[in-house]
Image (cartoon, rainbow, N blue to C red):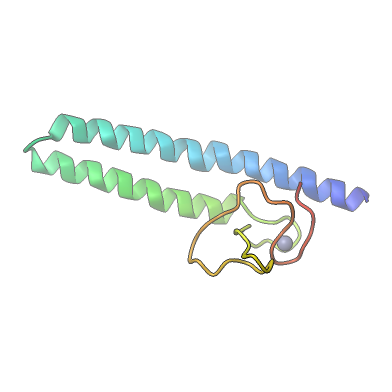
Length: 110
Ligand SMILES: [Zn+2]
């Protein structure tokens, strides 16, 4: 029982870290990219290209930070959504923001 509570606490800590180091910078990057694009439209093509690169980089940042921080404390796999039969989803990348349990090792996470 104590082990389960420790796992849940550690998962919540990891999720908080992912929000601060993953999602927050991504939102700021997207906002900044949109601001840059706003300045460049309608016809300043180099600035629009720069804005697209910034927004693309935010997607890479999201994936890297999720893989780094948003992992199950027991099996160290990224917590992905589950299919209807309870098995991990096959989609190439997606995460479950409020999982009940790990889709791989079935450890309780909340
Ligand atoms: Zn797990």
